[in-house]
Length: 364
Image (cartoon, rainbow, N blue to C red; front, top):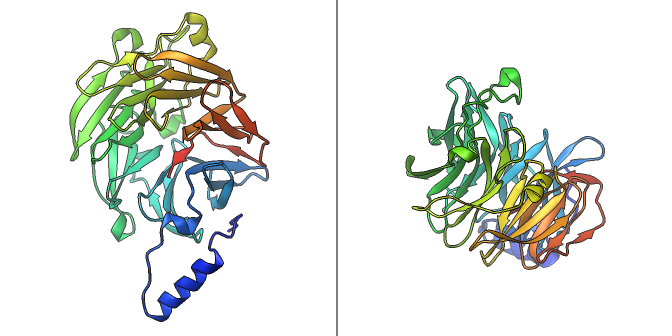
């Protein structure tokens, strides 16, 4: 295990030594891991995979080995612990102590299931929720894992649709919102999509294991697969989609508020075509008034006004995908190893590191 930065400072070490001498063992916090602002999986030039912690300037604080390619991660709300998920259709997730780099636990999807690369902690941090495919029944499930018992699986419930991908917790609650992409797959056929002609994506809101509201796309958007989500402080949900039909997608970015219809961003056909049918990640700015969306296939980052979903800026960045809120607008990572910021359509990028960032940049 290699950690790039010595994150336990001398004065902290001395303080801990004194407490240990008194028989007091303080709980670790994210400060002990260098106060990372973000987590991201990456592939190194030697063919191995890592999970990285980055500070608000996007400096790398630590790099911890992963057993295979990662997709996204979930950061525990209080302690320096992250769950790194395998890329769909992976069957493992690794729980990592981000101070020591030690693997604390490994989650294995139950027989007949695979993960979708995303998960979310409860507000207390006592539970982890994972999106899963019950591929024999062609139905989405959400697994529940008990953190206190070393991430023992204790329950599961229906995701409200087929192909649940991203999962987020609504603000100041344990209500979950899930992007059910609508696409049926089976490990025997890899990533082949089995039901495109009849697919139906939806957004489901779940409280205490029960679906309490569902938002469904209209017939025009039937072949839009809702994949990635962002939630602002007032509970508005931004949606990034991937088009499964022929021709140009009718829309790829949308917003939803509970009890209302889905609102799509209005773009010209040429501007939609440039996105190449694919949104890789989506984020709200810190103030919740703008939405950033990335298209690695189109090499584009778009910034939208959240109130009317109008486009305010578009920039070209090769293989851009990871995006998260930042004091500078949005933090960005690319598959070429560059990272930087964009808030007004004038992105600034830093020199590439010796690794390729994976799809998502996760806020700690």
